[in-house]
Length: 252
Image (cartoon, rainbow, N blue to C red; front, side, top):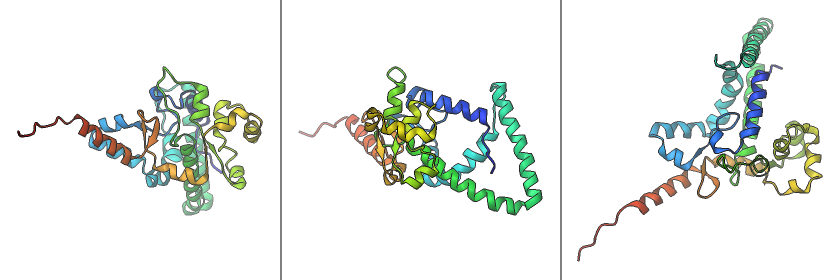
């Protein structure tokens, strides 16, 4: 098994994600890119097209694993702290040696036969799990002035109810509200922490089917306070254009 993500880089992004999840003014690290309806409308056509492609399930869950797992972790800015550069470059060097050795022992076709399915399947599942942990209709997004760490954890992180076997295979990460409230709780205690604290029983709960349906949500509607699809955004835009169109005087 090869782990392609540099640990120090992942640890930093994970910490930033916990400290900024649901904050409209601090998006961009460790989260799924999410635009507001107004931000989407303000983009030129190519910007809207790029965002639509990014949020397309075939791109996000099909090509996404190759970018998130294989390519993106290989990139590190020279302006990044030395500790992060050392972690990323050290991981890259180790992977070059390991992959070259495996290709020499097994042949490059044998290596790809083992690695590609594992990367694509686990990567797609991992991206979907991360997606539904924060991308559901009544999730939590606020500006920095009104943002709350506890509210972001309890209102903006879902409790994904999975069948027991899937809950085991995914390390209880469906109990994401508990994890966001306290990342120090080990995964094997997440269920007990949820069950033993009544305050956690009212958090957003979604089923496996609802999690699959959540991929239709694309934009944050600040007026309605919920995630909506592109169709809703187009409809509200048309309504706004109608309301601002001056009426022509009628002939007498």
